[in-house]
Image 1 (spheres, rainbow, N blue to C red):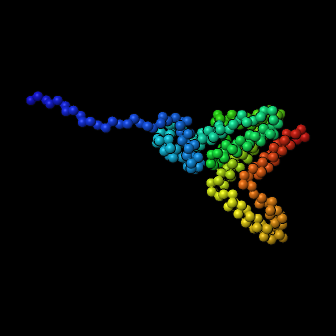
Image 2 (cartoon, rainbow, N blue to C red; image 1 turned 60 degrees about the vertical axis):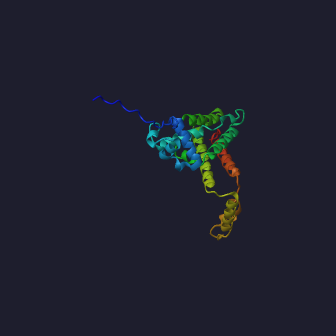
Image 3 (cartoon, helix red, strand yellow; image 1 turned 90 degrees about the vertical axis):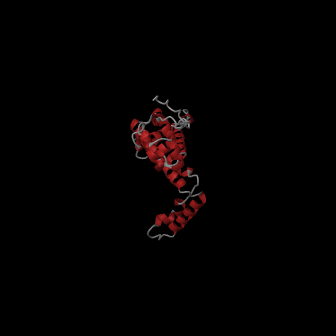
Length: 239
């Protein structure tokens, strides 16, 4: 008996081409930045970033070793947003440092609590190196001693990160200027009500200790003035 020919295959649904984006390190950092801005630094995990990138956690490990490296890359990406063109090369070095620090505060403030990642971590990515080189260059070009320049660079970066992180905590709390002012006034009343024989200085300075500025620029600028004045004093020939 002759063999039957194979029957025709029934029509099948054509698979749509994959819409998964091509994966590379830049795409992963883009996804991490989206997670950071939407949910904060704690949400930047391998699993969550993989989900944002439309892939699996296992796939991410082909481009980043672990979460620490992912955060390093993310921090470098954010630092790369520094606009170094705003530095006025003809301005005194003190003013250039102020410009630099204000720019850092702006950049960190634009990305939730990313400033926390700068504390206890030495950024080593290419973008961070360019920015750090610019800050160090301001002081070296002004003729400040190498040791003073090195210690000052570390201190300024620490101040920048700490202020920006504290401000991110305030923003994350959801408190507005009105509610913060209410707390400040309550704190002032509390200090004023303390026993003056035990806490004479806190009672005496209750009002200036609780001076509040919604923008907090005056507080940041005061700290910056103190730091720069100290750097200048350390760099003077008498030191």
